[in-house]
Length: 218
DNA sequence: CTCCCGATAT
DNA sequence: ATATCAGGAG
Image (cartoon, rainbow, N blue to C red; front, side, top):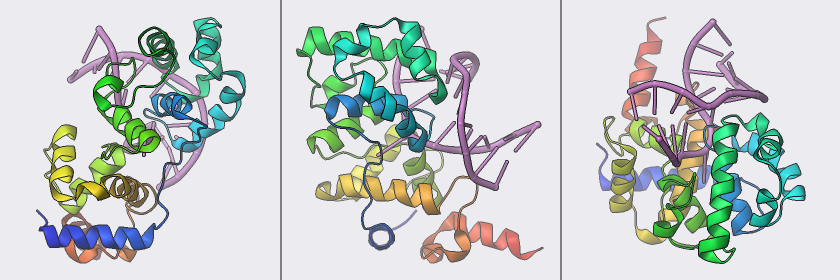
């Protein structure tokens, strides 16, 4: 496990590598963001943006998603994958936004997670990006990077990864750290081809050193 | 735990 | 051909 000082080194290095790490899901307002993040489950953000470019021209408010049939919405998001679940969730989510929240998106994680298709990770992204609430959403990149570097343990659940990060990173840095971990994971410490050979964190990375050793015997 | 699922990289 | 992608519900 990394020391607090080593974690600091990781965060500072990632800040240099990705000084402009930010939310890459296109959106005009909190409502669009909720839709985009729900759609982004198990799907690249590039593909989500491709779909929402057209989707957001057709749908603007929760009522719009209820004005068409579920089959039509499925068709409009079909290239995303998991489109049956997502279409159903989005419609239920829009109903609740209208009936419980007066058509507005709630601002706290507690309220957000009650919405259909919105789990802990999505709630954190929306609260953080749309409303400036300090949060660390643990997605596949944050989890993989935290485990490879040794910020947390391999066996840790997503909830435990989030707790560990919140404990070891100052609250005012939660949101930027979250985005830097994602960029680091998405563009450098990639799932299938991590760039260990040119990684500035190799000296403190458990997994990276293991991988580089396994490569010498070739 | 399984299921949902098309697009893309490897 | 297979792994992976800003996961969540049952």
